[in-house]
Length: 431
Image (cartoon, rainbow, N blue to C red; front, side, top):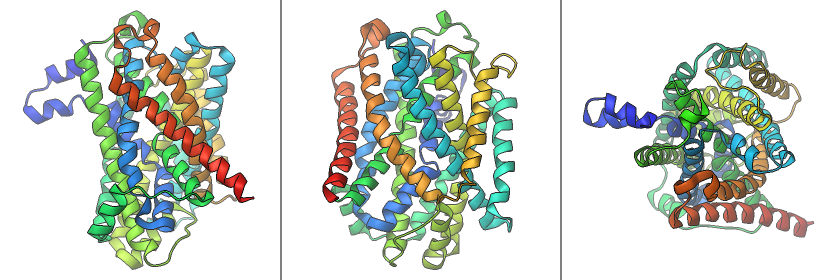
């Protein structure tokens, strides 16, 4: 019996029973709307108005499929994604993939820490740079001294902060017709700026760190339930697969509703009032206040705080998980630092290096945006490996992909690759 099955059987009551099976998918979906995503979506709304809303609709089935595949790999094999890749492909290939992931995650985490500090600064008159160190210490302390269950509970509560963005969108009073047209009529422009924005949107929505995090958290759920040995975790049930799909779909829907709300809020306010350039995600919150009202800006800042504290530990932990799995080191948030010293060393180092990024004088929103672009190039490469593994009967057995999942998975891979290639081509032609 799977972990979700057991949770469902233990819980009495109709709706509450189904809440019991929501976990890794909800957390992964919420973490997808990190400050990198917020910055990218805010910039897209400010620069291009309602014309990028369609990306929230198009990416939903694609990201849901990809995250389901990652969850299924973790459930069937009892290993994280990097651990599975390590058994199927040359060591140098796996290390190259996790190395690229680690670089993007560390820069992203550093920029996210700066975004948290800037959001705190909107409420407390303390310089943002002075808040970077205490924020980093709080995050690392939670990861080192909190068990997986404690960390998971904190993450679930932080996910609720994203509802603030829906409130900000409502307060912005977007036009109904503009919203419907923008959401359901794809608008594609073949200029480098617009294509870079599309690649960034796809890169921060279907993001590489989510692939590793989803698979690993399925494993951690089993470990937390007492299945510490690989032979105990191998294999899964049809019911557990269905519940994992529900968890993932709810999480991704939540993520894309928030994505749509952020673009709506900035399109209906900043774009319409000629504010097309912002330097930080916190500046987007400040810019909203005189246009959409004080509470709209505050809601954006509250959401930025919550999602920042959610996403930074997930970014650094996914790096630590991926590297540790790739080289065969002991790992896990349920393991003590004494039992998994290298795992926690990577986790701490990723946070510390990320904190240093804030002292380099680079615009935080530029870092967040271009990190999303890097992810846009890395994601299609990783997706090829995910599709190959999830179709490999030697790995997945009877749980290999069906026609629909295969079609959507390869569609996500092709669309991500096409967006990246189009960006390169148009940039070269523009020179």
